[in-house]
Amino acid sequence: MSLNRSEKEAVISEVTSLAAKAQTLVMAEYRGITVANMDKLRVTARNSGVSLSVLKNTLARRAVAGSSFEVVADQMTGPLIYGFSEDAVAAAKVVADFAKTNDKLVIRAGVYGGKVLDIEGVKQLASIPSKEVLLAQLCGLLMSPISRTAVVLGALAAKNGEGAAAPAEAAAEPAAEPAAPAEDAAAA
Image: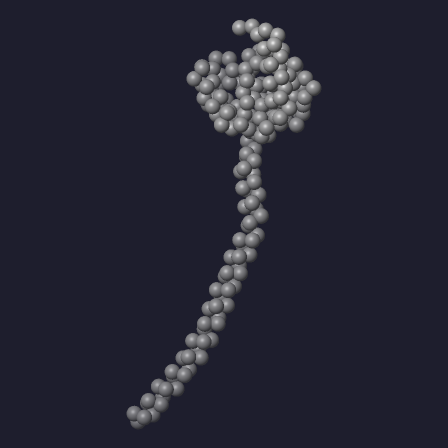
């Protein structure tokens, strides 16, 4: 189905706005993927905040012209699906995870920070934990010294509490012992 000029301009402006907001672009060949699998990929992408598009390569090249994604314009050939994401790792993670279970999806290239990523680069980017996981790990690291200090102080307080209880018990015990010899003396 051929697009008329105004439809092409609309597609270009839409993809240009996606590229302006995105940090990452991942391109993959989708030859041979069933419609059901493509729908699963789109749902997963949508839930992860990734915009997946099947575009004519000439329109994609025009849309990314002047952006940080222009560095892969020469690789925009063949049947490609384009994944844009504002999150630095989301697009790479969605495409790489889907490619693990479906050998028909072949990662072609990616761009992050204006630098071209090869297949291994996309996979490495996908292996980075999400922003939420990294923030949780950072919070855990920041809380670790505080919780360790609390454990040590709790142990010291418990030890000092035992030490304070022991002299009180020792003071109570000698008072009971002299009473016993007095009873022995009275019995004699």
